[in-house]
Length: 157
Length: 157
DNA sequence: TATTGTTATACTCTATAACTATA
DNA sequence: TATAGTTATAGAGTATAACAATA
Image (cartoon, rainbow over all chains, first blue to last red; front, side):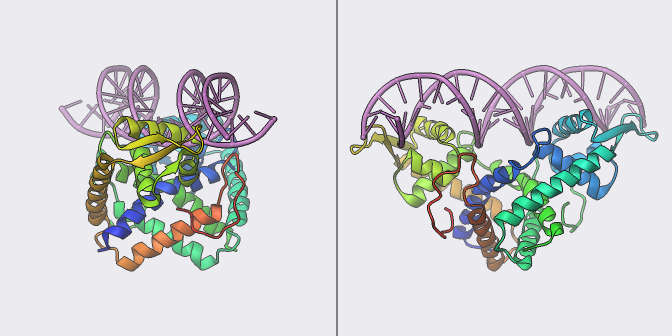
């Protein structure tokens, strides 16, 4: 249990980290904003899935997810095939064009981060990644409509 | 210099940290959204200042700063007195009501973070704060209209 | 009746550009 | 002519609620 001062500092750091996110967002292709990039990245990491699962991984409402997915689908980066097991659902899957875009994103992130974090060691980047993962995990699902909250200690994706 | 894998992971973590920010934002009073809270916090930490300085600390455009400032001024949390030295400028200063609101914010952040981060040690919170500060510092000013970029190694505020 | 997903609407935050007043 | 600040407009991201189709 930390002190008030540390919590206030953390609140301030989180508030200010938006500037970093915006900076990184500026390297994205105009057609592929951050929301789209997140969809592609998660489909790459976790393989094909349904809308509801993707919304859970993104930790945003499904209505928002639906719009992000429509954006990337319109550009041919994913396809949505009907789920034979449940006709209400659609299965989301990366297309070859989607993988091309992912490669492009990786290049751009890589060169931007290599530039800005030139003096960071491997270990420091790992530490930050680990702490951010833990932070997300600790907050768990603090979403408005708090879902069933499956008992788990997994790091969120 | 870290590996591509680590950079991609960092990009993903930053993308996902928005959920934590939103979770924390939900504890704020309806009248005082995150942008307003940031204005009050910085005026408290750094004392009275002009718009341009505040925009720099917030790392957002002055036009945006102007609107946040108008919001808190309308609610009586700060006042804007003319700068005798430069009639174009106004000096921003917390009011007693602004300090009351800050105390309220501190309470709410405190109880939310104490709840979510119950199993974090002091050191871990400090480490995360330090790494986030360093991250912001490394990104320095990657803003669209990159300002003069005063040569400094200070941690951004 | 409950669930999956979509759409309409509203709100917050941000950036760009045009503008006013002062330096 | 340049700078401090404001306002208008536009765009991204998100949430809530109403809705359609299916379970």
